[in-house]
Image (cartoon, rainbow, N blue to C red; front, top):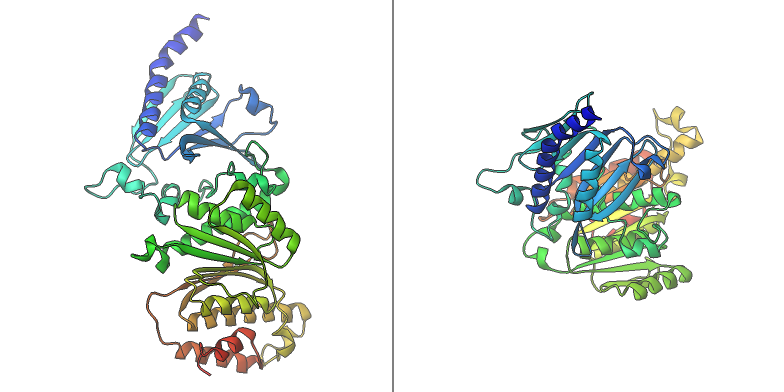
Length: 443
């Protein structure tokens, strides 16, 4: 008992110092994250989960305009998120550390890294050093100004990622799971916890917002004077609206942009469902309409989204985006049927393409490759990449196009398209035909 009392007395000033540094970092808006590792047990709520806790990552968040600390508890097969008001969160952290629940705690700010460590005998020590994985603030700028961009700028969304550039990067979620639309759409429960059956959808939603945020940051929509203008997003084939509601919430709640988001869906039952959610949550700047990409004519369009549009529906969607002058075009194509029947098996590829699976893969690559080149010719910087891991969905390819600020010659790209078509014997490609009919591509 005397030894325990001596240890408690020895540790008290170290714990108080670390707690004070944490409190100051949060109060001065310099807290980037707090990482707790080497869990020793003894916390009933954690022990009851019956899994090995790897670490806890704590970050500041703003929920319903009030500051909170978000706790991400990372287990080998799942993550659990819990948000607490700052005072409650600091009290909980003090209890955990005083009780020896964790052997190490790492506090990260823009200018320093503070480590609280316990020896094998339970003695605490605090070390303060320079950040090991963050860029130093620019000369003449305060730490807060250097790391916390002004609200409403896309750079503000990426602030946490700027200090986690290592291979073991901590996950940063772009959406708060407590947002009401997630519960209404069945992604989370009433307490804001992601339902186990929706964990893959939750990751897909966040990945989509991550991709969109990066595209928006480099698009004309974030360059003066357009960075102060409204953004109109149209999402074709929007289904139950997971991504449609997410992009609306992120633009208006996180980025604080004046945005109007329209979901366009053929199935009336899904349109009615989403309209009920919009009405219940009283969401400004959001609409849901019944329609088809081939016949829909929006009054204005800055961002065109079409995920999993079947076969040439993707071509019609891209064509609509180009024709409307969209600054960002996002497509996730599927069911590549048009090109495959036209393909020849030119030498020396004939022995490889005799296998049906290879011919199908070649047709998919050619279809999306030609779409990317046609977007390039139409004045867009275009990428084709894996949107999300195959473990989440097999429809995982993304075509992302961001309109260039200045127009460039398309002659060389058009020649490349014709050479590819001639090599494979392709006679017709839907997007090319649509663009030529509108005079958006040289005949």
